[in-house]
Image (cartoon, rainbow, N blue to C red; front, side):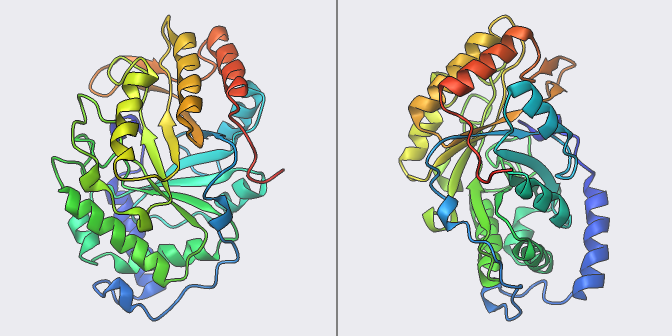
Length: 335
């Protein structure tokens, strides 16, 4: 979903947070150094994600605008869906600290945390040039010290013109260079508990940019995560919403595919669209579906869209039946 649908903290607030902890914790040193020249390493991560990269059955997840420690969305989703989500995705602004306690709580209760790291108003060329290396090292150290896995998406919907890091503001080469810079620093810091999720928006009339120039390469990506919604602008069928993008990606990547953010808008066809989503995803062999369980205004209009699984009795029934029938929902770790 586009960034205009999300209630994120302001870029100014993120900058204040970044300055405070960079000066206090890191002394502001080394922000321009090359990632491969890092000498200080993070505490050895006790968790390794290598066994999780190819799930044996598809997962079911939920995403909203709240922080990891705000557990209400998980409780609500569990009660309504009849099972707990396997993945809990959330947003984090560039410059924010990693919420160790919140992510640990999620993992301890059987949820794989997934963090969508948003560069906000920080230019990708600055990240690629190493101007924020100090922050990246600090974040890598925090994540490495957390005893659990983290699925990490950086600068999602990079092909979306509505984003400050999208095609109208940054070239694909800048995105790739920034992604590699962040990834290389994490590797140099000895981080082993991150699943790297590359998350473009599905290719449609609003996002016509070719995806291959944005792909960092197989050695830099663990999962491909697609973002797309059943609604008045995005699409009304899996075959038109996701399939063309899946075909385009198959030309350059064979990585497992996660539908990292999706939902179905409430209208007379919602039940049918939910069936189509799960059946199409199962046929395509995706490793999971993460649902945006919120009501939000459609960007650029005052039209309120209801993406919740419980927007109607029929929608909830369809969600429960189709997710179960298609085999979505398994625990990465038992409660």
